[in-house]
Amino acid sequence: MAKTSELLKSNIESVCPEDGACTLELQKNKSIAVKTDITGKLYCDLEDHPGTSVIHYVYTRNTDPELQDGQHREEIIFEIDNTVSELDLNNWNLSQTKMIFGRHCFCRGQAGYFVVKQGKLRLQHTKEALRFVLDFTVTEVPQTLTQVKGTFTQ
Image (tube, rainbow, N blue to C red; front, side, top):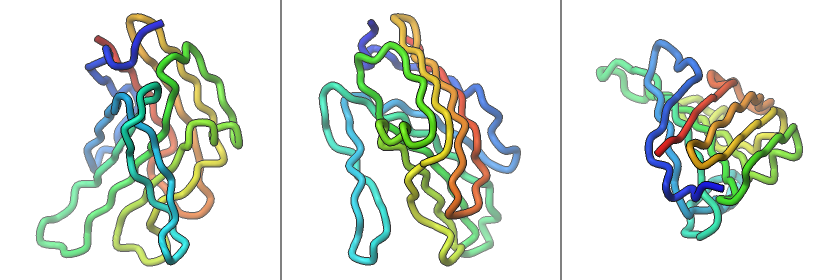
């Protein structure tokens, strides 16, 4: 089994929406702490945690710099055990990865973080690479991202 800390390069295999840019990052030896603020809204912090790592995919829509409050960003964040060799999770089982979807925009009532309860994650982790395919849906807000595919290699 590969150590996640050895994986360095990321490759986005899913299609990034044409009107923006996408990034994929593996944050080694981190864990997601899902919290609730005083208004009841979810948010997350990353904490140091040997033994787990966080995969973070971000889509940022291109915006006119003249527009104030025109920004739009979506992200999917989930946690994996560094020693896992294979995952095949559906719907509520995605909670094992603390998977959350973030939508950040000036769109009152339709922004924030949401627990992903519907979807499918397939992940393979070998000495050479960590590969994953994620299809997901959130029901609380509109979303641009519905599929993310990526690979991390040495």
